[in-house]
Image 1 (cartoon, rainbow, N blue to C red):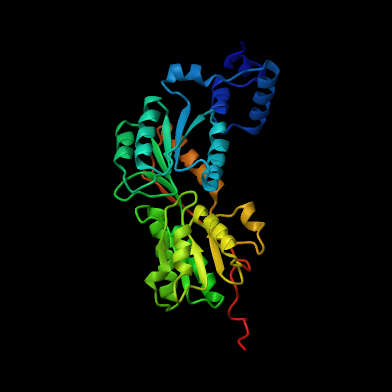
Image 2: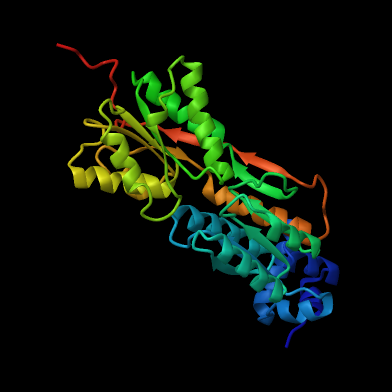
Length: 338
C-alpha cells in the first residue's frame, strides 16, 4: 500500500505538505497539482481511521437536526458535507423529530461514539445537555437558533431584519391588516421573527392587532389551525406572513383546500426559497435564507475548534437574508375602488 512518504517522493514535496493537503489546509497551487497527480498515479487511499488511532480522533462529527424531511435542514447539511469532505470528516446525522428528549438522547449517543465535534439545531431554549458537551471538552456549534444564557458558537441568520423586510414590503403594497403565523416562543429564532414583524408595524404606525398573531409549531404539517383562526376572524387580515418553511407549505395546502386564490383572495408571504414555491402561480414571495452558507460556516467553525483554535469564542455569526417579492402580495395601492 502506498504511503504519504511515497506520495511526497513522487510529487517532490515534503511529507508535511502532503499532510496539510490531506487535512484540508491550503498549499501552493503547483504543489496541490503535483500531489493530486501522485495520489492518482499511486492509487493512494487516505485512511482517517488509522490516523485517528495515532491522534485520538475519530474524524467523524455529529449533526443534530429537528427533521430530516425539512428542506432547510437538508440544504444546510449539503453545505456541511461539502466542507467536511475537504477535511476528510464523515458525518453522523441524527433526526430529533422536534423533541427535546430525543435531542438529549442523541447527544449522549454521539458522545458515546466519540465524535470529534457536534453541530446542533436545537429544538428548545434548554441548554443543559449542551453544557455537558462543552464540559467534556468536545466542541459544539449551534445553527439557526441561539439559546439564551448559553455561551456557545452559533451560526444564525438575521431573523429580525428578514421578517422586518417581509412585512415592510407587504405594507408598501398598501396592506394594513397583516397576520402572522409565529413559531413557538421557546425557540429564539421564532421570537426574533415575531420581533421583526412587530417592529415593522410600529415603524409604520400600524396598530398591532393581537388577534392577527397566531402561534404554531415548526414541524411538518403544522399551522393548519392557525390559518383557520385567521381566516375565520370577522375582520380578517388581507395578508399573512408565515415564518418558516413548514408553516409556509401548510399555508399553500390550506388555501388550495379552501379554494382561496393567493395573490387575489389573500396575500401571502412565506419563508425559504424552494423550486416548489417558485413553480406556483403566482410564484411565492419569500424570505431567503443562505442555507448552504449556514452549513459551510458551521462546519468551518467546528473544524477550527476541533483543531484547538478557540479565538473569539463564543462566536455569534449572523448571515444576511434576502427577499423575493412577487404578485403573491396584491398591490392594494393600485387597486381601483369603484
